Image 1 (cartoon, rainbow, N blue to C red):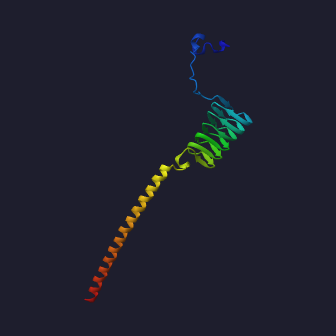
Image 2 (image 1 turned 30 degrees about the vertical axis):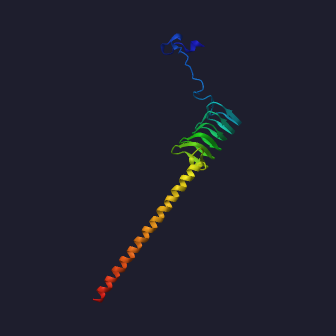
Image 3 (image 1 turned 135 degrees about the vertical axis):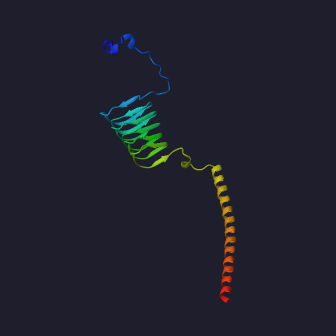
Length: 189
């Protein structure tokens, strides 16, 4: 078998061998599982590594790592993964930390994510919920107190504005009456 790889570009067996690279533990490199474009299956798919799907799948996907749904993929499943990139078609709900919808990606389902990016041309038909975002959680007691203080100061400013406005109206009425009186005097002359 080594004869097949000898003399590639003038290399000998000794030259062609590269030293083994150490892969740091705990950091996934590439994809642990690849489902090819000519593959079709259904069921419950569970993986703790990174997954790339280019084929057809129906069921549920529970991925502890990241998942890439390739352009040729046709997925009929709910996807739950850490980070999700979609370039193909997904019919199902998507839950992840970060969801990236590429220009060829299409989703028919709801998205729950901390961060969402979409490229121009992508398609989403569903509800998007930003989980972990300050707008999706109830306000804290400190935030409520700050909001009340702002409303109170706005009410005080509004009251002060009404007083100033009333004074301006009174001044305008007085000026109008004075101008009307002067016109009456001119008419009498």
